[in-house]
Every structure is written in C-alpha cells, then in structure tokens.
Image 1 (cartoon, chains in turn purple, green):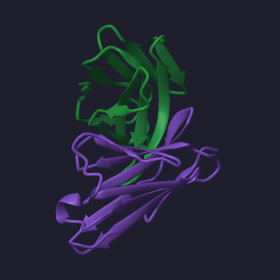
Image 2 (cartoon, rainbow over the protein chains, first blue to last red):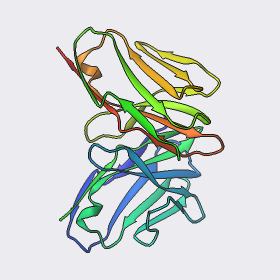
Image 3 (cartoon, rainbow over the protein chains, first blue to last red):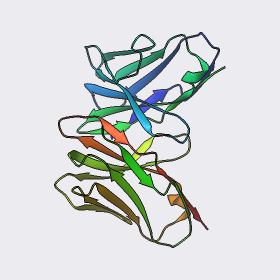
Length: 112
Length: 112
C-alpha cells in the first residue's frame, strides 16, 4: 500500500518550453502532496506544499510563477516548469502524505 | 533555520561488516526523524521513523538511535550486504510542520 507514482520518469526538453510532471497516489487519497528538487550531490529541497483544492504554499526562493502547481484531486498533483532553462535541470520528487510521507520515484528533467 | 548534516559523505565497506552512519541537526526542537534509502535515480524508501519521544527504532538489521538534546542520530547496519549499497538520507520534521529537512546523504558501497 501507499504507492506514489510520477510521470514521466525522465524528460528532455529545449530551453524555453514548459514541462508538466504528474504525481499520483495510487491506492490512497492525499490532501497534501509535496514537491522536492534534488541537485547532484545535494539534499532534497522542499519547493512547495500542495493542498487539494487550494493554492500551493511555496518555500522561500521558489518562484511560484515559474513552478506552477495544481492539486485538482485527492490523488493527483501536477508541477509545471514554465519556460524551462538549463539551470532547472534537476531531479524532481513528489511525496504524498497520509500519516507519513510516501515518495514517488522521481522525474529527471534535462533542459538543453 | 534547521540544518541537517550527515557524515561521512561516502563509505565503502566489505560485505559482512557492521557500520554506523551519522546524522546531526542544529535545532533540537524536532517532531520526528526519519532515515531513508535512495537508490540511484530513484525515489526514497522510508527505513525507520523515530518520534521525538523515542530513543531508538529497529527493523531487521537496521537500528536507528536518537539523542534529541545533542542533535544526533545514528543508523546502525549489521552484517552489511551488497544489496545495502545505496544513499542513506536523514530527515527531520519540526513540531507542527509537515516539512522535512534533509541531509545530503551518505553513499554506502558494500563490496562483495
């Protein structure tokens, strides 16, 4: 139980394009999901907290207009990286909370 | 601001050896502490969760201890196996917050 999936698992895009990453809780409902970013050899850093039916809460330094988060249902949250640039290349991981946080497998984004 | 440090950054041991991974945090007012395992390019698997009122947790060959007052935790792995090779992450959550603050991890290699 408590399985979280992400799609896609990896994506390569050109600079200036937008990329959408999906995070799904497969066998439970989650009112709260989290989005993290992990650069090579660095810690996972929380980007934002996504609450179903309301606006996401962004961490300091994370541009809300660049990283659009939508949590339209209790099983799905999406992260859209708008006008992606090479410095946005990273490993993006989501988690869904039910008692504890359960993490997805991550999405590797490479922006050329 | 909470900061989590993990030492060593990397560790290589022969199969069968017992080992200890260290985690320290700057703010002792934590709600709980978790140890995760991350395989290359993958998401996180929760190994052990210690509540702030607990001193240790055990699961199979893993034992995690917590000394909240000194801001330290250790993960003890007994009789290590090549399958234990992964990056081990320590994360703390603050009271009243769902946010997790992660260390950079310890990359463990167990050689056959």
